[in-house]
Length: 266
Length: 252
Image (cartoon, rainbow over all chains, first blue to last red; front, side):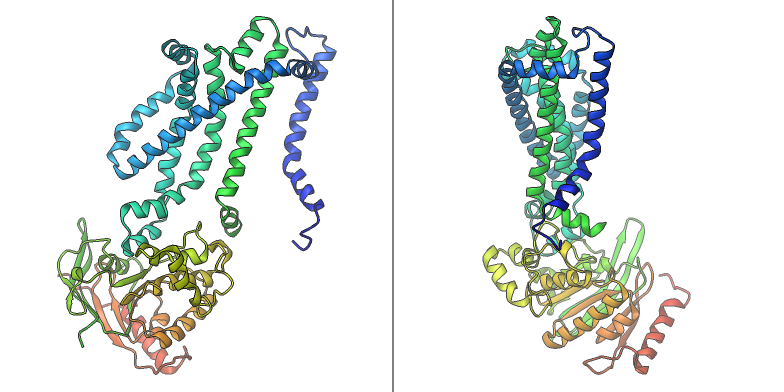
């Protein structure tokens, strides 16, 4: 604090945060690389990470062309899922019996194995964007709904009592207290769901698509190119990490008070 | 002059449990009255009846001589704990009541802003509650309460969560503020010394079901500075006797 313009302590702090993660990932990749080289295992069985990377760079145009549809399916599906989850969460908050009517249906929807349901959805809705949106929504909708409903319920009772003593209507209490109270839960749900969303989109493509990382992986596998499968996996992992980081940044921007509260409580 | 607030034989049950058993009390305009009783006695239930959070079972409540239902939200309520919204800055928190009343954000803040100095919050307008000390949070909560310009303040154990030193400081400060503004106040507390220090009159409640054990007038001159004067100590000891050694309860 005494040296606000010095960057060195901040870089050191950043490294203390991400250092262990880099170390563990680096060790794993290194072990893999060594094993692939020493054992002289066939690259069509287990390609070395260096080979995966080299192939990824060589095939960057094809990978890029197949990443774009996956990103749009992920974001479109997630946006639909968020919109529906938000609307339903508000309805459930205002009409409590809805919760008991709807939750069992949604819980059952979470038990459906994607392996079985994805080809069916593709069969019913074709190879376009629709089945992807539906599958992404299927895996992300319920966690978001639960997060929002729990978030509303986490509202401080004193704050609700205070607002009703001021003469605030139910809608006013929702907007002034319940909705902002749900933000930490919303973002926790968002961080979990966004990782499901990418997996959901790839699964949908795997079951049938013209383009996308999922279908790219399937084709690469059928052509005995595990290096390209892993290159696509690498892209999807980076994509998930990027989306996760985006939610963290959005949360920081949307909730500037959160870190102050955390500091106060610690 | 009619009484500001008058409760007659107000009762409340939750299921089979009697919480309030015929509470009768009153508050005059400009008077500081405390309700003192053990924890869990149903003190806060009285406030919830007054602010419309609950319906009573029998008895009646008059405000300025007319049934409370006819009066238009005459109370400004300060709940236990400060109930500041962590996502609103201090000035947004203090302007909350005015905004709910329908005042524009800008007008509400314009009305609250000049009071920050008097409440010891100058310079903290745009901080978040997490950046305030416990005492400052309570002062912000009180500012949010009084700025609503209601006929009467209801304070529910406002200093209960503070450390002893901060609490004493806040009690002195509230006394000073009350001397200046002469709000009509009904205070709930289980702190005997706080009640004696601040009040014109005290109603001592029994444990559940709550009834009024005694009504005590505090004749100490104002402004009160000395918490440890012999008169104050005598009143305190007397109240503690009433609370800690109650006569065998006569159930009705």
